[in-house]
Image (cartoon, rainbow, N blue to C red):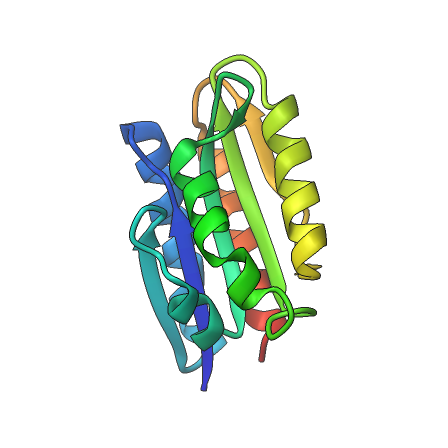
Length: 149
């Protein structure tokens, strides 16, 4: 059985909608039997990362950077998971109010350092969450799961 870890920081209704759309993508019946673990970024552990075959990550862009919660997740898991999880598929979303540039750079640098393999183009946008964004979040997560099968 494939296991996918969804780690997110979703403090607003808008970002919660994105997380729910991603979760629905992980639960599509056509993917078959997938074990899904959902963790808020402040609760996710190295054990969660090591137990998963693939990763879906989500964050707000705060002051031009990833959320402090997702940064904490990476800070507390990075050394323990870097080598054993290299090559595993992942993707992510970033939602910002005005600018996502620093958050994009951070996600690329951290996940490159982890050696994870991007399975789907990230969903990165500012402003209102639309149905199109939610559909893309669903597709993103489903593709990550499918790539681990």
